[in-house]
Image (cartoon, rainbow, N blue to C red; front, side, top):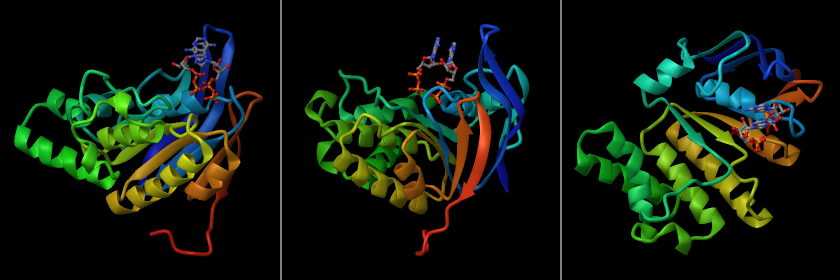
Length: 228
Ligand code: ADP
Ligand code: ADP
C-alpha cells in the first residue's frame, strides 16, 4: 500500500533557490526509507513537505492519499523528530512526552500509561522525573523519539536525528530505532548524509543529487538476515 507519493515535485525558494526538481517517489507502508545525499540537495525540504511544512511550487505530495496539512490537522498519523531534541527544559521527561497528548485532549490516565509505555521502550523508565538538563544527548534524543511515538503515529519522519551524537551513542540509537520500527510496525522516513547510517537502517534509499534536488537512484537494501 502506498503511503507517500511525490509526483513531479519542484520546490523553489524565493524564486531563485531550487531545492527539488521534478522529484518523483512512491513510498510503501512499512518501509524504512532514507533520503541520502550531500548537504543542500533538498532532503529536509522533501521530508518537511510530507509533514505539510511547505507547499510544492509544482507537482503534488500526497500522504495516506490526502494532503499533508489535513493529515497533520486531523489525525495523529504523522510524527516528526528533528536533529535537536527540542525538549521543554522546565518540564520533566514524563511531562515532555505527555505534552502532545495533553494538547489533543482526552483521558489523562490513559495518556500517562501510554507515555510510560513509550519511555520504557526507549529505556528511560528510571528517568520519568528527571529534567532535560540532567540527561545526555542520547537520552534527550530518546525522550524526543518517545514523545513522537506516544500518539501512536503510523509514520515517523526523522531529520538527521542522530547527527549531533557521538559515534557510539549513534550506533546504539540506530539499533534501538530498528527495534522500535519492528515492534511498532511503522513506516519511517529518515534524512541523513551518512552512507553507513542509510545502509544500516533502511529497506530503501532515495539517493539525491545536489544538481539540484533530483532523485539520482533508488536502492533496495537487502540484508542477509531478516529484519522483521
Ligand atoms: P538538505 O536537507 O539536503 O541539506 P535542504 O532541503 O535543507 O537540503 O535545502 C535545499 C536547498 O534549499 C538549499 O539550497 C537550502 O539553502 C535551500 N532552502 C531550504 N530551506 C529554505 C528556506 N526556508 N528558504 C530559502 N532557501 C531554503
Ligand atoms: P538541515 O540541517 O536539516 O538540512 P538546515 O539547518 O539547512 O536544515 O535548515 C534549518 C531551517 O532553516 C529549515 O527550516 C530550513 O527551511 C531553513 N533554511 C535552510 N536553508 C535556508 C536558506 N538558505 N534561507 C532561509 N532558510 C533556510
